Length: 276
Image (cartoon, rainbow, N blue to C red; front, side, top):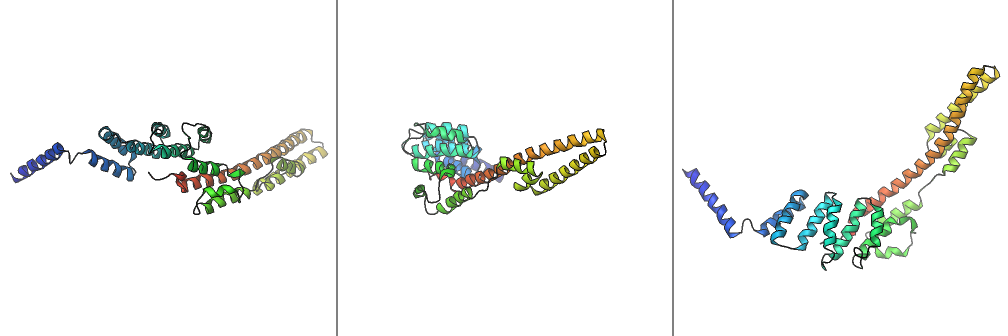
């Protein structure tokens, strides 16, 4: 009997809170949505923000919804919302910056560059932060003593200088040089690109095949001579091409290392996003 009475009391309390709006109020729902967002439960946070927006049509809720979409890598949905906020004086700048930041998160440099010419998305607001992103992407053209450093804070400069130093000191290999070296001495082109094991293997294989071809020609073993001469020529040509490709691979790896550092720096600096 007491248990039934307790259940009746709890139901009555819930009904009371529901009728007065204190328990299921928009404010409480908003607190719950923000809690979900802060915990990284973005899918449920989006649902709650949209529900609260029906009662409290605050554009800040739309902005947080867009941020949640970005965190889920659903960038096109986020961009649609950010664009809808570009006319909001309070959220215009931060929405602009987030649109550009998402393009870099996607590694969509082509779209990032196109947006730079879109005056709707890229007005004067947000210029400094977007320009910083642009400078980091264009690190190849900058020098350590460039005046562009004045756009960055003292805490940002060390990482930025390290990035530029990495690019300026990057070693590249000439594919043409690698090919010529291997044409002169098989395997030397691979050694030039740092591929020592392949270089030594290529040298030994070419020497062995050339010797076998010569030995069979000398002893007038025509059939074997043709076979080993063909193999020797094939390995020789393949070694030249392989050295050329090895230099290209070496350079691509160097570029990839720099690219990883670029995006790591952007992420570390949080894409220069201001706090809402």
